[in-house]
Length: 119
Image (cartoon, rainbow, N blue to C red; front, side, top):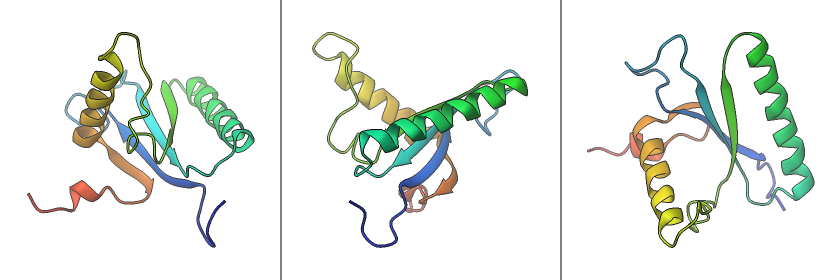
């Protein structure tokens, strides 16, 4: 369970065309809600329900948004899931991380470290 003062949500990030030249009025929003690995099933279910309500509210305003709950350890332990085939899951894992590294915009929470490291 959490250490003293640890919040369940570690960060909220938009990824994809958000704030890029490719964004348009019809662009959808993909939002990663990164959470602590210590959340139990009930807590994750409630968080998913809240995200679903936000998606419905956004749709009522004419905005297409998708929220994805991301366990903070998901990519650290290569737990990205598989689409089928031997290498498909690992390829999907790499492509998803690549898109996140290139396009993520922090909306709330922890800063994105690789944006602060000098090139």
